[in-house]
Image 1 (cartoon, rainbow, N blue to C red):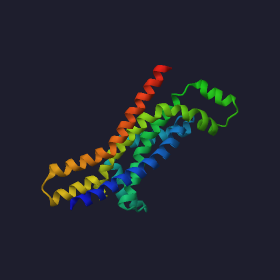
Image 2: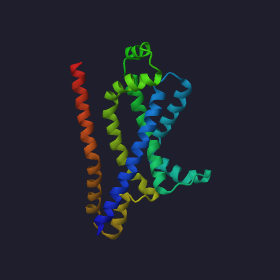
Image 3: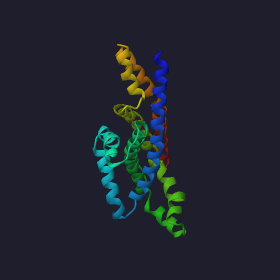
Image 4: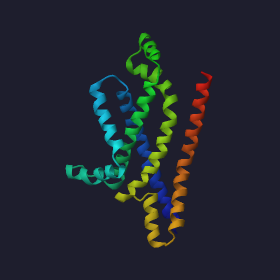
Amino acid sequence: EIFPFFLKGLWMTVAVSGLSLIFGTICGFLLGILRSGNSKLLNLPIAAYVAVIRGTPFVVQIFIVFFILPEWGIQLDAFPAAVLALTILGSAFICEIVAGGIKAVPKGQWEAATSSGLSIVQQLRFVIVPQAMRTILPPLVGQYVLLIKDSSVVAVIGVTELTRVGLLTVVRIPEGLMVFSLVGILYFAISYPLIRLSNALEQKMALQAVRL
């Protein structure tokens, strides 16, 4: 009877992680594009944001979202609080990945795009970002795997994902090794395809670099 319970936990983990990956990627790309520019007015606050998020434990961040924001009038249930906290975490790391990829594009490409009469948005869309994706994709997929594993922390605010399901099950069934082995296997089942994708992308990028 524990397997339906674990399947619900698996679905919750996929839902929390999936939504966070989508929102975190969108926010991270926007911040990364802004951070790759030369505007100090934008760079300084984004750099501060990234430093704070990357430099503090995720469990502290999720406590702030779930317990402190209500004191400021922002009341969130456990599920949206978990998605918001993971989105903030993911966006900070993805921002740096995207900014690094864009900065790795040779200046000659920017100059060629500018001389062709393209607007800055068109330059990014048609010239710069497609080239930057070669550098961005492998670490981006790796960050997705880390974000899925970080989703286990949302159990502390009561989200019934895989880790919390394991904790609740151990209370009823004194077979901790079996229970958390199953939890680990299910996390691995979610993450392994992304790990393989990341390795494949890294190998593809390495082969392209050799050819160049």
